[in-house]
Amino acid sequence: MKLPVYLLILAAGFVGAFLPGCYYDNNEELHPELLLDGNCDTTVVIKYSTDIQPILNNSCGANNSCHNAFSTSGVTLGDYNGTRSVAVSGKLWSAIVWDGNASQMPQGSSSKINDCYQAKIRKWIDEGTPDN
Image (spheres, helix red, strand yellow):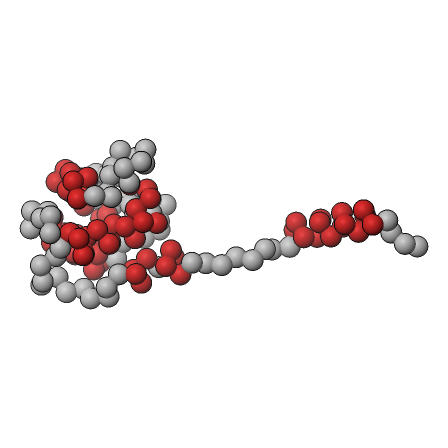
């Protein structure tokens, strides 16, 4: 007995809907630290443009999508002035060390940003948040 063509198509569609599809992890999104310089030397001058901004761009949403000028979070980390404002207020540090004084960031993460990045941000804040 031959099955009508529409039943074969329906069956194929049903099977296709429940089979797992292709899934490709983007290694850079899973491990943003791979995009940054692996050097954790905090004895050098920590620069906003080459140290802090890349950390924030890669840790605060893809290319800082969570905290850019168009986000609804109210926290802008996409430029120096926004980042400095949040750093000076203490919210940046509180958010990355999870001390309870600000929302834990990265949001939804089970872990803080790594110790190296924390050290670089802390040094930059302690040096007065220079725009360099």
